[in-house]
Image (cartoon, rainbow, N blue to C red; front, side, top):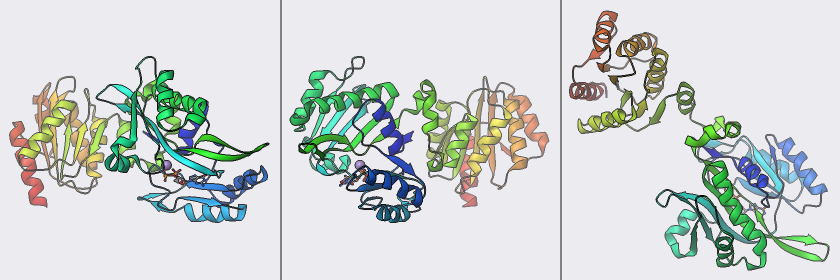
Length: 391
Ligand code: GDP
Ligand code: MN
């Protein structure tokens, strides 16, 4: 689950890291009001930033500096409603504009191979890390944190010095340690700050330079959300695929793919095997869908809706191995769902295991337009053929 910049900044500020003040606005008038507050406080500029879950907002025109409340309102007017990489901007972040001296890159990422959080830094910030990794991989400093102890102070100092942040050592160490701590505490796969910036501010004795987290991106581990009840509030439903939302609410594992054969299977292993067999038979699966053990008829109906919601689906293949899931229950669900479906596509069903005989009778007696198959190979071949005919 990806967090919007303002939510990511909330978590980082809560961890005591130097995040500049910010506010969120969903109308130009709100943006103006917030900007006016920062200008009254002495800000020379205010930055207006699109809140969408994609990178490169700056290049897309979604980050703009304003010198007055009028200009802030005009920028917000232009950015709100703008589409960035296919996503409509519904909110903007308003913050005092920073006077940037230097931009760096710093991130705590989960290194799956090392099974540790890795702190990644580069003195060349602002650019996308993927570009940098390709063009100049040596410019990226990588340090692995200890799984229990986190990033050790000497490691944080090493990163700070290698990024040329000796003048800001104390803050740099706090930021390095803090990013790793947030990744571990919040179960995040990624905590990225790009840019981490050296900014110039007016002090009582002239200008002073300090480190600030100007942008923030956090991706939470979906499998760990259960350990953080509060994180559910950070979810942005506007930017999620409605099919993903429905699948989550129905308790189904559903992943959309590019093919034409909708697969409804119980068990993740069987689902993968089924997809492999579809490919071997010359077809392309339209999805991965595990309806889970003990799937009841309402779950089957949900699964059908999800599959048919994809207009590319030309045939549905149901492969159920009745163990905890009872074949008759699934068959009843299929008949019910078939009667209510909004779009007609051929359906091939193979049910074996617990109550398979009752399932076969239910399907036969229902009069529903369902093709039954004895073996899995037969089911797959039939589904691929029917999808081909429909195309
Ligand atoms: P991204 O493009 O989606 O990563 O959005 P960022 O928040 O990283 O902003 C992109 C770029 O805009 C940064 O690299 C900065 O160069 C610039 N920028 C962002 N905030 C400020 C600010 O407060 N002041 C100034 N001068 N530039 C900013
Ligand atoms: Mn950025």
